Image (cartoon, rainbow, N blue to C red):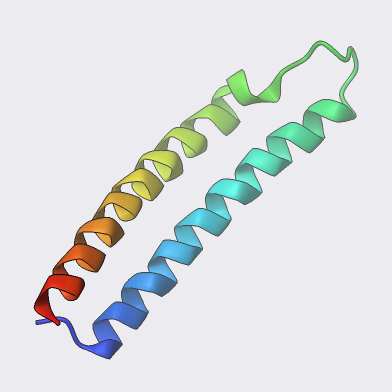
Length: 77
């Protein structure tokens, strides 16, 4: 059922979603540092909040899936 090619593809997707989530989060954070007044929080703006919600949820699902896959592979061996 799970061969090395499928696991490698899954891990690439896992890393890609995580990288996009971190990139959007950092863009919002660093953008807020240089935005005046300094009390502005860009994470609450829809342009950042919607992608953070989507990629955060996808990342959470992938984390849970990777835990399940790890348990499954470990029991199989």
